[in-house]
Length: 547
Image 1 (cartoon, rainbow, N blue to C red):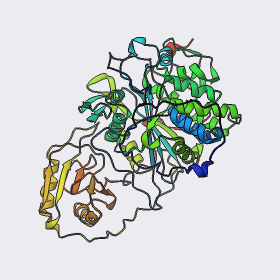
Image 2: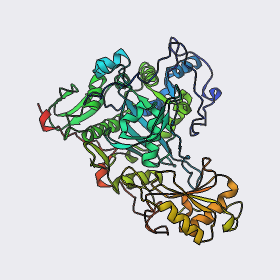
Image 3: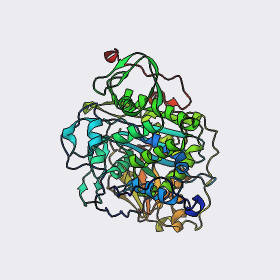
Image 4: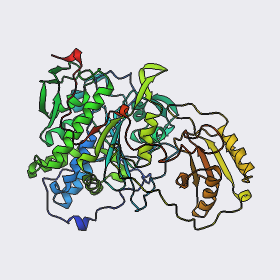
């Protein structure tokens, strides 16, 4: 839900940044409390669910743009009252509406932690501006869909950034979600990933991504149609390229061959067009969005169009009005801290990619993650490996000795769960019982199988209390699991093993599996990766839309 804001006429003097105290809780997970909705505070979500959305009426990319533009936000906002005004512009919502939340990413040897931000584009027609820009007036009252979804992964040392798009028509498991506004419970279902936003809001899309990728999400940022236009206008336009004259009657995009500078509604048309590029699918659209993002980043990093104070103020207004964020990221101070983190990443170490996919065997109109290649991409993100293949070789992580030694094997209760089922593979039946029996043979006589269905890419051994870490390491060692598979989790009652898709057969963990053991040094070709410094990229026009 959004909070009302009071407009203040321009920047005023007030406490400086040091007095305001930039909040260092940026990387803490959402505590769960919800802000009360003041009178008149609009909500970012739509009303009752309507009919199926029409093709070509909504995909947009506008959040990564917003994120990077916040690098200069504080320069625009000179005073305390104006800062509070900008805070009031921001929409805020809960981070994760699912029952099973992943633990935060583990820090590296230097104590640095990766950062994962889910970037969402809403097709909401709730406002008159969004109806005008997005069409489909009849959809005004249906719940919005998240038709653009990208995961932005910033490495722990802030040396690289990887952005992964998942096309809107990807069929996934949407977990059970509970809307904390009205208490409505949405049951677990199999559907296209864009529908997750309608199951309680962006927090359900976050839960869906964690289920799909095994990557813990720290924050989300969501924007709508009108926000794209405002942002594109504020930065003065973005250069793009097409290899032929193009006219897409559905999105309205019309460009001449070669490079053009687009802004406002034309930028929205570029980001939404589906039929104009390549084969007319979401895959070509994602590639066009990646090109736009890279070009926007280069524009913002150059600063050539952002030196005018008036433009800076306009950008600050556009950025904050356009955004809905999780409550842990709900102030300009926190967005400023995030912007400083992103600023450290060299443009040449930014990689845009699309999740490798194959046609859905259940529905030809949909796609599913491509086995092996999609798993490789998600594994690279979980293991903080850049997609560009330029990471320095990492030394193996050293596991510190536990503060308490392991108890006798027969005194360690262990629960084993089967998480071998993923979006690309059905679960292997009987795995939990098989490994529980193996543990009993190894002396862990309190090992039991739990039939609760799970989905996990990498096998993990979790423990609840610090005093149990030695026990968890002993269990992992007995099964041949690496120390890196052992992690702390407040959600488990005792030592808990979740068997992942990396261990589908046998009773000893395969040596070829596990974090960092396979060659995940670079994204597979099927990810169609694009480097941030690539100024030569030019979109291939769909032959049906050449004019």
